[in-house]
Amino acid sequence: MKTLKIFLAIGISFVLIHCDTKKDPLSDFEANLLCTSFAICNGETPAKTGIIGDSWTDLLFGYPFVETLRPQLENRFQYKFVGATLGGKTLQQVVSQGLQYQVIDQGGADMKVVILSLGGNDIQANLSEYIGNIDAVQAQRFATIKANLKQMIITGNAYKISRFGGPPLKWIIHGYDYPNPFMAPVISGSDEGCKTKFDRVGLVLSDPAAFTSTQLDSFNNLLVDITREEPNLIYVDLRNTLGGKPSSRAEFMLDCIHANNLGYTLLADKFARAIYPITNVGF
Image (cartoon, rainbow, N blue to C red; front, side, top):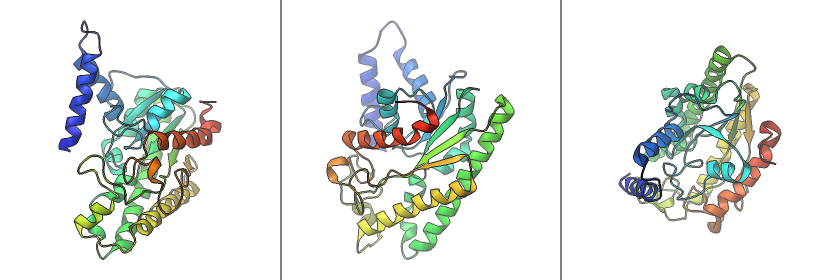
């Protein structure tokens, strides 16, 4: 977290240096950060597409450290988002904070779709709990993810219809591509999904790649199961974009679980094509 703050400070300095000194750049930066990362905006910001996501959509407070899915979709496929994207965000936090309501407020009556990039941090948190009890802990976490995801969609759509009328929103969620547990972390302390983290917490694995790829497959299967119960949820499979099972190729990876710029370019291409029939944006 300390290193994260350093990067944030660098990002703020970059903004201050390159902006119009007649304005209040710090206030502008804070307002943009609150709106894009925490869904706290001054009034509504109408858009047809919402987004709620973790570090696969915004790795570092909007700072262009890596062009993740959100900036890829905005810059290359003409998406205009309202939403809340922030590295480290969990599905549990989204539901607890009611971020779905805030994103709907921002999007307004014309918003039709919300893109979701969530669940990975819920699985990776407190890895030491898996020691000696992998199957049971994973089953419990998957059950919680399923309950939270369905609650977010059901309550979000009820709120949208109550406030703006019209049909329910479509919610698009992607599964992640395979991690590469043998990659080194780029930011100290951000080594979730890395063999180094498994070793440090005492989670002894004979084959870390088999563990992470099997867990990743199970998560994707869970999302497919949820779509059978929730008709307004649409799932996009991004597996095998960065090289395939059991581990994504190092040349496409920034660290254990995040792609680099080239990797996110490939992921965004696949994702944008998959969701075009729903969003009608980008091609």
